[in-house]
Image 1 (cartoon, rainbow, N blue to C red):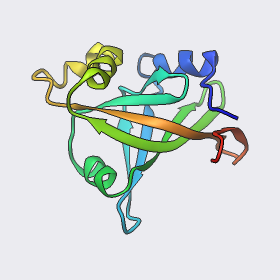
Image 2 (image 1 turned 180 degrees about the vertical axis):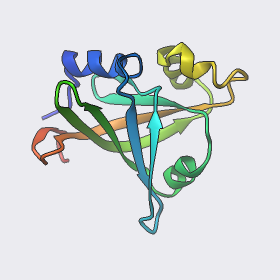
Image 3 (image 1 turned 30 degrees about the vertical axis):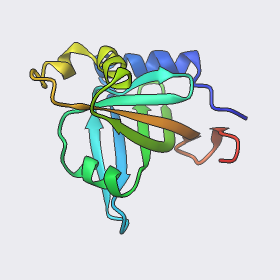
Image 4 (image 1 turned 90 degrees about the vertical axis):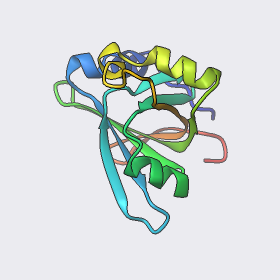
Length: 142
């Protein structure tokens, strides 16, 4: 089955920062050293893709260069929702993907990058799981 980010997921991720539930992005280096970062700019790019505005350009980017596998964790404690979006990330320093992702980024996050030196990180989602391990969706061949 193909991944299809639901309307409820889209709404909750779109409002994650303003609702006080920013997403976390997990990466790992080629040798498996993990890194986790809070990302207030995670957005739904399309029905199969999440994105974020990468302005830090530190260890997450180093890890992505070595290992494009990532997980984005959305946790809404009030509603007891715990979604993990697993996939492969591609970084875009220019072009339409970067411009579109920038347009989806909350103003508060863009204001922290006034010179717009950041890049768009697009994650093609391969599976969506709950914290319990329950698989909600899995891409064909996933």
